[in-house]
Length: 160
Image (cartoon, rainbow, N blue to C red; front, side, top):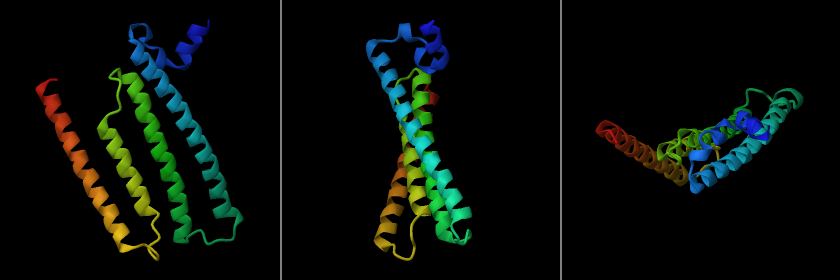
């Protein structure tokens, strides 16, 4: 009874469980705990997002077209999206059977985080060196993404 309920609730974890080695079982359990932790963080972030949207747009007498209001909203929305993408990559790790998070996905999540940072910069007080450093980080991550993507394509073309 309990085994069937677990298979129904967590197919990502239970599928092929008997064929997995001890380490792969450990890896799936850790992925499951991480997934629950991130899901909890997403739920809390969504709660605060809804509360802030209602406050900013309906309760407070702020101008809803003020760019700072949009920056705050986009900051919260992108934070939730980044967490959900990270959680999705963990779930895909459990279901793929390969047992590791792809570097390509991690680099894309890092690029999303930098895009979020650019969107919420306060242009009135930002230091030009900080913009330069962020731009260099984006270029470095873009180059890293290109290299990883190119290596994956070469690996796929060779049939490995």
